Image (tube, helix red, strand yellow):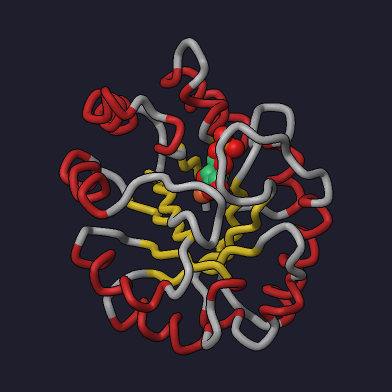
Length: 219
Ligand SMILES: O=C(CO)[C@H](O)[C@H](O)COP(=O)(O)O
Ligand SMILES: [Fe+2]
């Protein structure tokens, strides 16, 4: 399977959101990565349902929604109704993770679990077969534009081993500080999807940056 690029809309220009969504539609990006932050689970508030609804109206690609919110179960159906294809909740925010995964799937979405940098992949050994995507946070969640945490490579390798040992078909996504400097090493460690916010949107030519990142990931 091709390795995928998921630009993070958090780094887009919110006053020109339709323009940036259309740019992603035209580009080689595979998914739209959407970060929802509630100011409680993480010390930042991004945007909520009305903005997501309008992004979904313009996006022609898979919507990969990363929830950094407490008690995500309350909103699973709402996010399905808004057009999310993949809904990722944080391991640290779920008391009954297995029930939450069932809830996401019952609402017709793929189920993802994100791990904070301090959370070991071992915590997923009993649920990995029920998880479509694991999002390894390579920064502490809450903000774009942070520096990549180097320990991520080892974590990807450990997760790859766990997935193999359990016969699961879970995708591994990396989120935070992804650039051309770490993309290839992440793919070689076992990553399937690279999220990139600042690296794409702060570049002078985002379409070219996405194309080059995708080619690097698949080289
Ligand atoms: O979940 C996130 C932050 O919590 C973002 O997806 C992530 O930070 C991407 O932005 P950048 O590539 O600029 O680090
Ligand atoms: Fe994210």
